[in-house]
Length: 419
Image 1 (cartoon, one colour):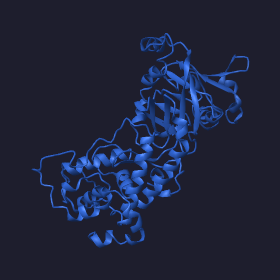
Image 2: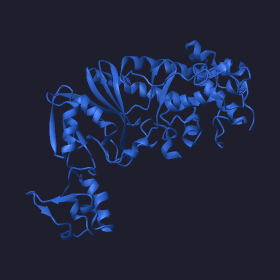
Image 3: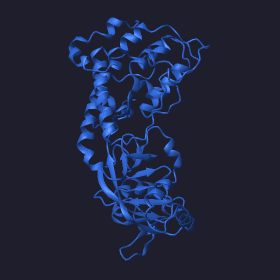
Image 4: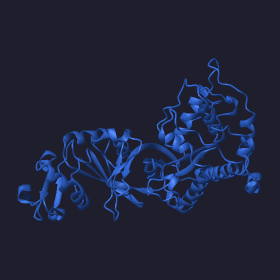
C-alpha cells in the first residue's frame, strides 16, 4: 500500500479553510502533530494511559442535557476542522492487530487514532502495537459501542474507516435531534431508552444514576419512538402474545412441533376465559392469529420476573428476559419491538423507591412467590424512547453508534447491515 503523506492529508484543506479557522487548538494542530511525531513504541516504554489517550469514556452526564448539547456542538467544530485538513487515512482491514503485533498497518492505525484524539501524539508513530496503542484502540471501541478488547475485528475496522465527512454529518443530524427534544427531558427523574445504542439511562437531578444494557427491536420489528410515563410494574407477569408474534412465530412453530405451546406454558384462551385445546385448531391456516395466547408466569416466561408498563399506542413495554446471554451480543437488535432490560431489578427498585411498602426485599420476595402481582407507582416516572446515534459527553469524547434503522441518511452508517 502507498505510504500516506502530508500532501495527501491536506488535499481538501482549501475548500473548508474558513471553517478551520474557527476550530479549537486541539483540532487545528492535530495533523501537524501527527506528522511531526517521533518514532516510538519500544517495549520498555513506561505505560501511561493518559498519554495514550485512554481517558475514561463513560460519563454521568445524560445524553439529553445542556452539557451534552454543548459538547456535541464543540465536537462538530472539531470534526469540521479535521475534514478541512484532509481527514484521516483509511486503515487496511486485512490483518488482525492486537497487543504485541509488529506490522506496517499498525502505523496507519496509530495515525488514524491520533487524528480522532484517541491516541496522544506523545505516543509517537511506530509499527509496534504497544500498550499506548492498546489503550487508544480500547478507547475508540468504547466510543463506538464496541467490545473494548483491543483487537481489530470487522466492526472495529468498519467504524474506523467511516470518513470524517460522514461522521460530521451524523453529528449534525443528531445535534438537531438533541435540540428538538431537549424540552422533554427537564423532569427531576426519568428513564431514557436510546435505541441505536441499545442502552437505558435512569436519570435523577441531571445525572445518570444507572445505565442498563438493552435489547431493542429488529429492523423489521422496530422499537417505536415514545414519550410516556411509567405507571405500573407487574411482578411475575403473564405474557400476552401480540397478533404479529402469533402470526410470524407461534403458528410456524406449532406446525413444526405440536407440543410447542404446552412445553412453553402458553395457553389459548376464549373470550369467556376458558382454555381452548390446541389440538382442536387447524394450524395449516392462520385462523389462530386472532386468538388470545397467554403464557403463565415463571422462569421461562418471555418477560421472566417483571414487566414495566406505560401508556402508549404501540403496545410496547420494558421487561426482564430469561435469555440473559443476549445482553452479551454486540448487535442487540433482536426483539419484536419491546425493550429487554439487563439488571432490571435494580431499575425497578429505583422506580418503586417512592411507592410505600415496596422495598427491594419485598420485591425480591414477591418474585420468589411466583404470584402475578401488579404494582401501581405512587408517582409516575417519565420514560422516553429516542434515537441518538452520535453525541459527545466530554471534551474530546465523541460517541457514535450503528444507525440500525437507517434514520441518519447515509447507508455507510448502517454498518451492521453492510458487513
